[in-house]
Image (cartoon, rainbow, N blue to C red; front, top):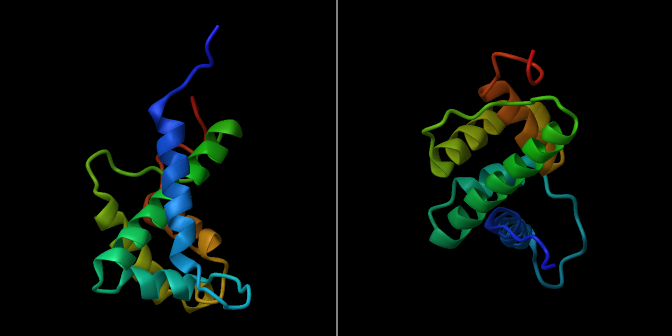
Length: 127
């Protein structure tokens, strides 16, 4: 029997690995990545950093969605026809407006932004 494989988990893992590298700085002491870092990277004009921004936001979205699925609860609902670029811009703008999220851990700041920007009509599945 061969193990079941799908492209989605591999794609998610690749996205998370790429996103994790966004904030890696050689010879820098370990620091907490913050909401302000997300804003800075997502608002840059360099293709590399914008790509990392998109991957990071997509990775956080995927992780939050997977956790929500496991808990049988929905934290946010992205519109069907929305680009990762649009989500990244809106998330960065939201965090930029919320000074209380600037020093927050980046993943938490992104989840708060996703939750507030893209609320669901229902708070749980099937309800």
